[in-house]
Length: 399
Image (cartoon, rainbow, N blue to C red; front, side, top):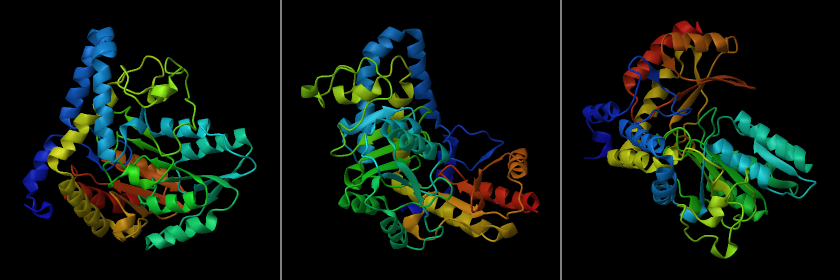
């Protein structure tokens, strides 16, 4: 059966496999994904064993599971497991890069003007420490084609640019940038590229081996629906030895002749150099295969088709309602599963947030220099009825 013709009971059954508060309309996978029951059960079982017998779990059981998780995630991302470092989240991944890179001064670090605030501060500190300038490039707010995005990047890159940092999918609006083309342009000019892939894994197709970036950080706790505490940093070709770890622990001294050979820890000496930060709970990392298997069981093509249906329904249902204006491009190549709408300047964001939650509607209100946004995330577990509930509430909340 073609994905688009799947009966509604297929998705009702899929939704029933999720842990969801029945009183809440969760339209915010873009911030945090809820867990499938099977994923929750897997991470809970692992944590139970960790609690029962920590030595046995950490020294004997966890290493082979970690190796399997790395292989599974790397295969899913289209990458090489020898280049994939597990982290707690994308913030930890990007901080490792920003703190570890040594850049030639004078020069600049270039960011787009739509980056996540914490990441902007991360690069602000890196610039201050190394005597560099931090500069932002303005993105076309409602670009109609990838070429318009590329023109903005080409115009912004200069001989002073040492690092280009950008999000694969922008957090405020859901705009998906043409990452492979951007990386190719930067590499042609000798500029390092660092990508914030917080929203990309399981939301849009990824092939890290073909992307051409120097560093890529991502989250697994959003669209992949893995436990909180599962993220990664991917090292591009030629960037394997550019960084130092944020913390020094037992991975510090390593045999460079065995850099990429599997070790007894479920890692390699090179990866353990970054990954081992002392005693920690590795269970979120070890549960990533269960999260991949769950959505793979539903079918990735089916999920993408269902997400596209919900995105289109959201656009039709909310555009123009109570003055809402689309802030996410209509071009399919520039959108994923997050749809943002511009709000009137007269709206009180705190009052709107309180009003949404009073009605148990979970959708973020985002404050941007150009104005307020409300962002709607739609994963396979969402329904048209949930979007209707938001649509029915907004006229009164925005009135």
